[in-house]
Every structure is written in structure tokens, then in C-alpha cells.
Length: 287
Image (tube, rainbow, N blue to C red; front, top):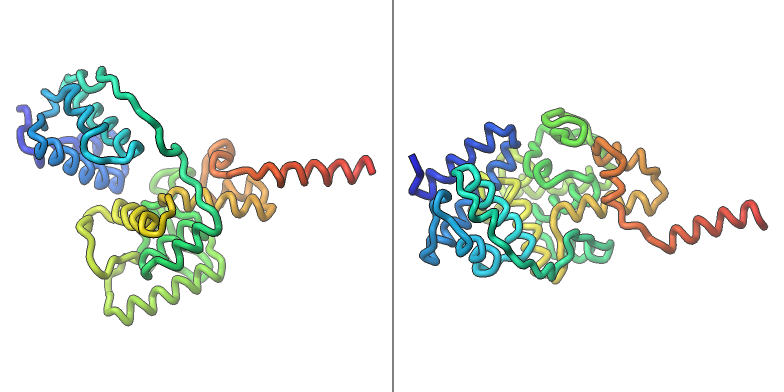
């Protein structure tokens, strides 16, 4: 039977994603996003039944509800995927003109990170540190529990080397000190949750912790004029190690990537560093 209620549509899509083997954290985020975009369409008086959506609904999501282009692209892709399951290919056939006014990949500098850390409240700061100084993904930060913290490592659910594989991610002493300070703050605030990252002032996405981390970091960046996303922290982590002379194989292992080619995409190469290396090579053999 064709669903007519938004909750039915969202639940059906979540069940479909489960059948596809999509991670629970991803399903939670897509449930939230789909419900949000369907309610936006409903508020505009547009169609919310995926079997009847068309070009008007797609273009409303792309241009008419105030989303950044990168977010609008994700939502349009999600809607077309949903409608395909109901035998409706009208959204997929709809042409959308994208301006690409913002870069597809977000990078941050050391100065950006310092600005973010200064402005962050304790939970935001902890998320920033785990992303930029331990290389954790957004979902891994959200999934961390107190018992996953050890003296010189944290236990995370692996991805690049096998979904669901529990691995030990090394952390430097400075990160361990940040965690200890955060735990002391949690204790003083009377927080007893076994999840590491908590939002003391509450957050509407309590059933979608991964999105909560994403949302809070993006909102923090907006408040201080720094364009940032959780994955930009991992790019910072990889690039910083590369700039310090760490070899690509080691970086790839710490990033938990299955292929070196993936790791290379996370490194923002400095042309000055490359020219210096070439100059040193020439000096060594030609001087």
C-alpha cells in the first residue's frame, strides 16, 4: 500500500536501508534528514508521497528551502533514491542547475582550529580534539563510550579495514589529557551517561548522535566564521602528519584506510614543501 504519512515513509525508507546493509548511524541520520525535508515540502503545500513527487518537489529542495548547495545535493539524491523504490523516476529525470558556490571539499588550517577550540564548549572541544588530533570520523566520535577510552588509545568501530571491526586507535598524551579534563568537567556537571560525548544543554537529535556531532561542529564554525565539517578535521589530521614528515603508509594506517589512494585525497600538499624537497635532493647530489 502506498504510504501517505511522513512517519510511514521514513520508516519504510529506513527498513530499505537496513536491507541494503547500511550502517545504523547512517540510517539514523537519513531518517532525520528525510523527515525534515518531507515536512518542509508539506509546509510548502507540495507532494510528500514518493510515488507522486515530480520536478516541482525536487527543485523546491534544491533551491527553495534555504539549504546550502552541498546539503541540497544530498537531499535531492536521497529523494530520487526513495522515489526510485516506488517506481517513480520523475525526480531522477529532473534537471537541476547547481551553482557550486562553495568548494566541494572543506579544509581547515591550524589557525582555524585554534579559533574553533577557543570558542568551543567542553563537548564541542572534545569532538574537535578527537577529530583533528586522533583522526576519528564523525560517527566514531558519536559512538565512543567511556569504557572505550584507554591510557594510550581509544577503541573504535573500524571502517576502511572492515565495517564493524573493533580497532585500537592510538592517541597522543595531549589528547589523553584533554579527555581527562573533559571527564572531570562531566563529573562536576553531574553527567553519568556512558556515552563520551554529551550535550549538557540538550539537543533535539538525541536519537541521532552522529548528526548531533556534525550539527554542533558546523554551527560552531558558523558562529566564528570558520567553514568546517567533521571530515575536515580528519583532513587536518592527515595533512598535519604529512607536513611533519610522517610517511604515507603510516598515515594511511592511522587513518584506517584500505588504500593509499584514499589517504592521498586527505592531504593538502604544500608546493613549497615539494620544491624544498627537490632542492635538497639536488644539493645532495649536484653540489
